[in-house]
Picture 1 (cartoon, rainbow, N blue to C red):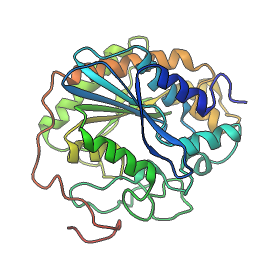
Picture 2: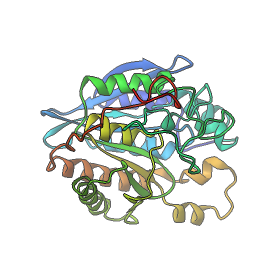
Picture 3: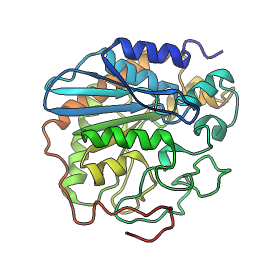
Length: 306
């Protein structure tokens, strides 16, 4: 059993009870894709989680962000489970299975490799950056936005681009910002990462993972949000590697490598960091549009640039 974690229905019921809930689409297997909004204000802040089915601690952290209420001066929208089919599959299997079985959507696609690559980029060969092999855990799918979960999220974000976005994962205990190379963008993210660590307070002081020289575009949500929507976008890898190995030197399965046995303290700590980072983003102008930022690949990953 995966207690104290909860089945999908309980997670979505709580999320709906915390604000103005909408269903913005359905998954490959017909499950609802839920967004919940609280607060008022001209600018929108976004939190997403559960894009990989095994990463339950990200979902619990997103709910902790939502429970704390609005971020002053803005509307807050939380999408707690971007990949409900994989969340439900992980629950049904009691977390038993390989990473590629628990991570991907019902059609075997890693949803966080399925977003369009900005700037006309082509898929990278760097390990973990996405694969064109359907048997791999990071299979990016037959084409950008080929999956109902990613297409529905992009349609939702297209109605109003968030000012800033935190996308919650596990278990590296790091902050992974959108790939940027302009100094203004780089230092803007540096300030947001500092704000996260200040807000995290009792935490491990998650460090930024990235380099303007060696980073590659992978089809992740953050890159698309920054370069196409001009959103400050950060991946938060909740629950650090050290914490995971202190919990289990040899984990009994993939699930307990990615998730703490006692989620509430980790979720509360990391939610405080997320909220501090989002609030700090309100002091920044949106990332500036840069030449070519709207150029994306054509129908397939290896198609010509439009």
